[in-house]
Image 1 (cartoon, rainbow, N blue to C red):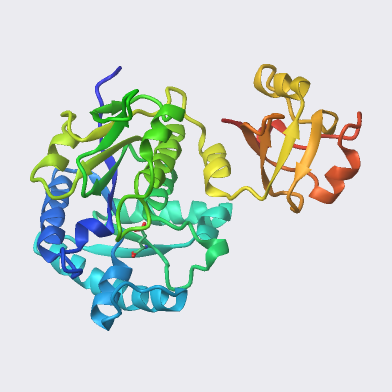
Image 2: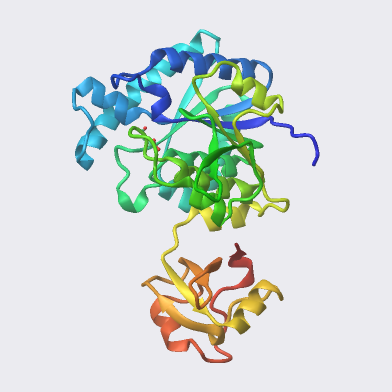
Length: 356
Ligand code: GLU
């Protein structure tokens, strides 16, 4: 493989990296992270920071303990986001760097025009040598429009701007695989996120963040499709970020796929949420996977969920293994009337279809 060149880099800091053992904002680690990022910016790298910690930071100020209800979490996020930004702004100022706050929700990504607009904004900020600092807009994000965790948010951001590398800074050294006896061992490189890797991920591990290894693997899949390397490294150890960017082996690195999806297909497959599923027969599977054809109603066995024309749906075989995703030409109601029939147009046009 060619030598890795990491120029545009998204760095995600998890809540666990920004919180002390007694639940306070960890300013020492925040400053350490900023110092390392500033050095990269000075060296000419384009860096986008995705930070968690608004809820933890706001809860501390409000004396809420660990907020439980959604209004409590959203109130904590509203208080915490500005506290967090204040600290980042001060820390980056020490290095003469300007920051910008970008708060994202799923709908900003799901709408193609807004998505492209966000990309232009990022590019302008990076050209101006500003460090964009991204978080989800937790205060207004309700379930339907939520990305939900910052691992996925960071991966979507990396895909959006076509980054070379996504770094997940966390409180563990990297990813652990499990051997046949179920005993964990450290994995320096993951070539592909397959079933074996997924089963090693287990349950979300941190009490503070939303993520854990499961969301990190979801992020890894988004990155793999987008041609972006992803690394998990320990946020508390000195110098790792620098070494990683220089191409040294630190933490766990996840390799991208050799042929990445183009920008629109990436947006389609990961930017949108699936609203239903189409179960297809073996003939349609061959047409899609081998012959590069569109999906026709004749090959659809069942329609799951309720959706409008234009929705993103999963396309699965009869064992419900997801094979592809695509934007449907017909609503679920219309599809139910035509499935199994010939010569009734296309259910999903090839251009709006991504094989997984
Ligand atoms: N957006 C959340 C926060 O700032 C964090 C979500 C996450 O940790 O994944 O508190």
